[in-house]
Amino acid sequence: MLFEPRSGRLAAWGNALLAGLVSPDEAVLSIVGEDAVHRVEGLPGETGPVGLTLALGRLRTLGVTGLRVALPAPGHPLGLSGPPEFNARALEAEEAVVAVGAALGLVPEVSEAGPAGDVHVSVTWHVLRVREAPPADVPSLSEAERELAEALREATEVLTRLDVAGSGPVAEAALSAYRARAEAGREALAPGYPARAVRVLALAQRVDLMVSLAYENGHGGAVAASEMAARAEALRPVERVARRALVAAYNSAVEARERG
Image 1 (spheres, helix red, strand yellow):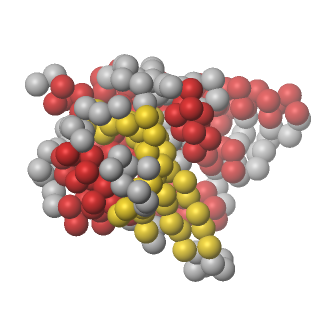
Image 2 (tube, rainbow, N blue to C red):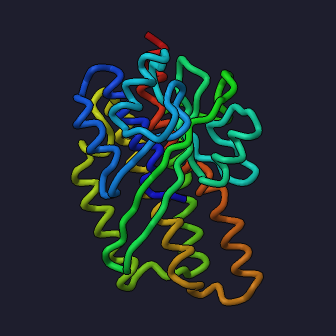
Image 3 (cartoon, rainbow, N blue to C red):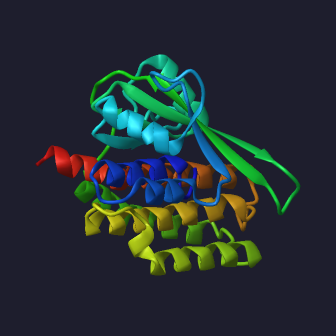
């Protein structure tokens, strides 16, 4: 799973722009991040790919009032509402953005070029039609926060019980990056998001990091095939909770506006 999904950046800063809280330039810079360029293809009224600034403005004129995130996984269409073509593209990318106010969705396609250490990353957002219906399995912020507290305890217990490696250069680098991000928590979400969303996002990222380290740092003491299978089975619901919480955090600005 992506630690900071591009769909999250697009939705968060797109929502801030639509609410008039940031300028187009600020929104685009934050969405692109460390990537080289983002383009949008398939936008109604355009014959070819366009830049993010034009695309976000066009979405507004098409009636879009907000952007939601979807982070689907096999067997878990989190945040999706159909049709099958869009769901399949989103599942392949493991993420998508769904517009509120217009039956449109955006799925990223990431391309990389260049040698190691100097990789040029470009992103094309493909615009597709979506079904206007409630998104699947998205919890409220309060539900997500409660689920995360339990998931964090479960993840810690699982990693301890299965003796999964949690140290070494890779783990330390990942933990250091997380701490730096947590210290800059005010930048985790765009303006207009409630403080609780920032808190839920940070906790979801922490749980996600623990799960990722468990998978990336070898088998630890779980050397037998049965033990490795048990670890994967135990961590799967924890990862699911983290994804649900990420979606809840990114979507909270839209949910707050809809509640008035």
